[in-house]
Every structure is written in C-alpha cells, then in structure tokens.
Image 1 (cartoon, rainbow, N blue to C red):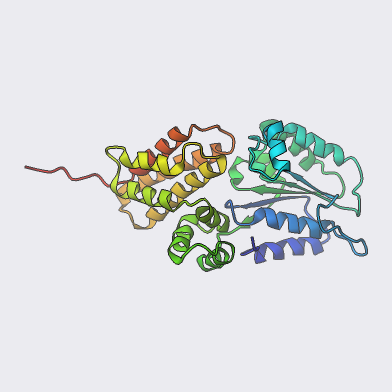
Image 2: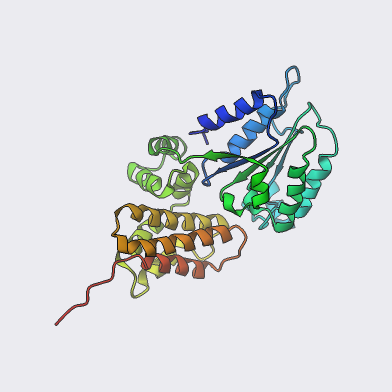
Length: 320
C-alpha cells in the first residue's frame, strides 16, 4: 500500500533523527489499515542506515520484527508453502526475551538497531512487563517502534516511556485512488460503499472489496434502519458471513459494524444517541477481543446483529 497521509509522520521522524537525542521509544498509533507497519519498517531502515555502509535490500540484520507466530507446526508448514495459516493469539514473553537476548550483542552493520513490535496491542501480559524493562533501561543504540491499533490496550507505563506518533484517517479521494490502483475490478458503487464503511482506513477499504463485504454491509444497514423482529435478517447476515470465517473476516465484520454505527451519529435525534453509544462501545469491546478470542462464528454474528437491531427506531403500534 502507498504510504498515503504520512507526510507529517515523516516530518516528525526525520526531525527527531536529525536532532541531538533521538527518543528510544515510539508508538505508531492509528486505525488498522492506515499503513503504520509499512511506515515503521521504512522508518527503521532510515534509522539503522549509516553513511558509507551498504544496506541490504531485503531483511535487515539490525531490524528485529516481532509479531504473532504461526499457531502450530502445521501452520508453520502452510506459511512456508505460501498457504493461508492461523496465528497465535498473542506475542509471547518468550519472543520478548529472545529479542532482549539479541540486544546484549552489538548491531551487525552499524551502531543502531530497531525493534518493531506489530501490533503491540497483542502483547500478552508477561510480554508487556518484560518489554517495559527494556523501555526503562534501553541498551545503547536500540530503538523501539510499537505499532498499535488500540493504544488504550498498552500499559500506561509503556505509553509514558514512548513518544506517540498518531496516524490520521486518510481522505476519501486518496482511498478511492488506492482502490482503483489495487482493486481495479471494483466498480464505482463498490468503491463508494468501501470508502463509506472504511472510516478513513485504506486497508479496511481494501478488505471490504477483497473479502466481498458488500452484502454484509447492505444487511447491516438494513438491520440498523428497520430492525429484525423475526431474526430473518440476522440469519441472512450469518449466511453472508460464512460458516467458518477466519479471524481476519471476523474482525473485518466487527469494523464494518462499527462504521455503520458511526455513520449514524451525525443524523439521529438526541434520544437515539445513548443506544448508538452503547452499541459502539460493545463493538469496540468485540474488536479488542477478536485477535485473541476464539469466537463462535454464529454467536458473534448474532451479537453484532442484535446490537445493530437495537438502533432501529421503534415501530408504531397499529390502532384499530
């Protein structure tokens, strides 16, 4: 994905690089799908590069990237074969300790080393506490970039030791240009629906197109507008979701429902705002749990549908 909307982040990063004391910890925060991981990797390559030292074009020995590992030996095999595979729920304390062991040695090519944790939201509790020790006493020449979609999930003590770089929502026209380039099969109506549902996230818009979320979006809008007294629409929603959706599709569905709720905020009567606020808060809770919980797909869709149905205006009672 093109690094759209990153001009201010680059200005801030390069100003820090040029300064006398580069901060050792950075939180790269913003909505999922705004290109934060791509920025973190490009920024890390600038950080470790030094004049007169050739830099490798591929994996860099002085950039450590920690993310969730394959869930099993079978998933490792699928990854190596280029097939879809499942990930573990968290970044483990063992991964953090392995990284810390590497920090006891000198960088390979220059004097600096970068550690990217993506996403830092997925650190298990022990891993967060272990990371905190490195942030409190960082080894010389070591710099941390913590990619996060939900900064509130990070320990306050971790947040307090890092400089936060916030990534804003991307403009609709820029997202449309990305969709035209990377999803040329999507027509104008599909792109418009994807942009409306994405909430400023190019990645979410691409997921909308690539995962064919148009039918889900239509049903969610219908449920939130008309309700679902006989549960028929929720049944259709479950069918559109699929019997065994993977974790990525589950999260995309939750984000889509959040976008539907957020889209109603600007034009509802004041009396409807508490229901909207409650539904949005519950969807935020589901989004926080999705990376680590094994949801029953049917129950998840039912909960999403019920939250959306709660937003529909009450039907007038017929009088004879």
